[in-house]
Image (tube, rainbow, N blue to C red):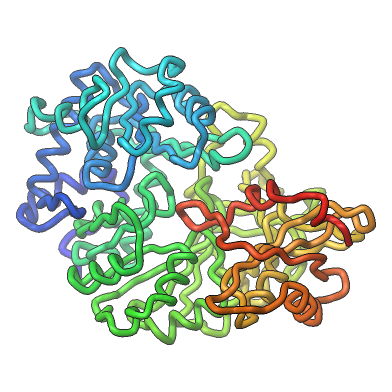
Length: 523
């Protein structure tokens, strides 16, 4: 039993300071270059916070980070919180133009950048209007005439920071996809994160956990487990970049107990020949999030990697919609993303906003105590993403299509924007993808809508073949259509070497749509 846990929902900084006193020589955070004890971590966080405060930054002001995973990234994030700042973690998938928009919209006064992404910032540096003079700094390198993170904190004092933290202050401002459209800022306050850490404590995240972080720290997919590990006195091992061999090596050597992975990472681990011979017996908890985990993958994981069970979490950075599936406890529900989490109210609505009865298909909306108030500076986008019940409570629209069964398990079908309307019928890409993925010659698949003169839209599939496969595309198409309904039939299959995915595993279907040419559109 934990000697201390964040059951009361304290701000994370109070928790970090507590652990530096309780277990100062225990390992707190590590990567391939650094290993810091709780005592050393606390000192460095003080230096970061003092350095930021000495620059004149005040509580609730914004600090942006465009960086690669590292201990220093963690120090900057947590030290910024100690200084009372709101952190703006940026995705390197965004274009330079999108980055400029996000940084200016956030009014960030400092921006730390990793060397790998410096070229993305150079064209927009003089347009970042809110940055302080010399507010652009290097995170992991020296050069370009800018101060590095190491130099920034080197001369700062390491004594305690006397700053009372308010849970009403902003914690982080995370922007939605920077690959298409105008990214929307999602603001989490410190209440939100404190509640989240309390829930993770109840799920067994405590000072004994040794968490392997292998997804990007700019993503909420990563942050909920990383922050909960730190708040509860565990140890976080940070991978700079995911690869299966390194993941298995660290898991065995460091006796990892907890991790969060996205579906594509689980698939790659299942394809690694060393999975079955690696000692993973230390695992107590592993989960999948960010995208639906296909039933065959869940089945393989439960069979080949049973240690730690398997949780699937379904939710949104915006909050409101939260479901959890303990796959090891309910193997009969592997085709779902679980039941609404405690305190979460999930409803299904139609196109007109009418609530639908159990068993009917529509858009998933949700309400809980962990949700944003609205998109930053985007009241019209907030209104568009809102649904209100009879009591006037604001529910967050998910953009996902699904239905609830008699036990209140949620079955997801597709993203609303990816639904294919063919001949007046709704066709859900996930149904077609499941059929394709069940074929032994198919390693990966994605289905999109292509324009059709005859049907309005028609399903077009992009398929990655299994190693050594020689199957013909037309043979595969006819096989798949034999397992699909008439309105679902795939019009064409294109073979592709690899599906482009985001760092958190989501297929970038916009990139597939950009590949369309007239020869693909007939049916």
